[in-house]
Length: 228
Image (cartoon, rainbow, N blue to C red; front, side):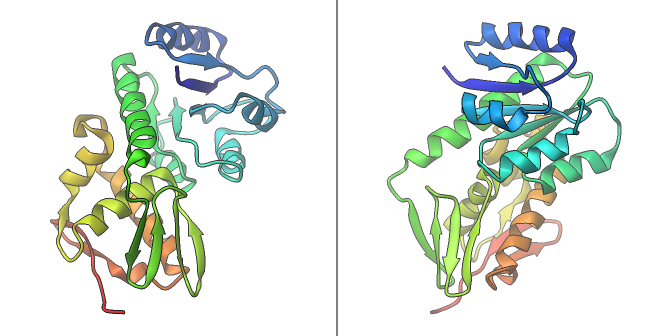
């Protein structure tokens, strides 16, 4: 049974989501003290976190930063605000998805199931290390390293990089990436993929690899390889 931590201060919404998630055999935890979210996160050790943006004490962005300093656990943001920048900020902070309130519960369940399948299934593959452009890509520990250093990637970022490296020197369409990431593109905005790829490229630039992820306008993305 997967454990879900729901960081939501609306008691009515929390109870409704808890009951609905329980019907899908998820174990749901809430926050009793919004000044001690991280302490409760560490104690619960959830498999997935759902965070509302507007919260007491500190907003969801703050707690996302704090969680990311401890863990790469999948994170879904909830927001009742109609601000495109909220989604962009969420993805830049390392969230895996974003859900606008009010939402249809079937959509949320589809997102949760897709993320859990992706995160907790693909790591069982036998191949965990890959050499690319002189760097070692560790799919199990979500890192890329070379002589310039080591960078840590989120679950989405390492998954995208893996898909591109598998088809290196070939264009991988945006549609294929979206379908691979979220199983059903109806539940994903095109902008979400763009934010994730841009964040991945920015991290790779720290160790001199950003230029090896190319954008093919109107087509998709390509991981190029050089001889080492």
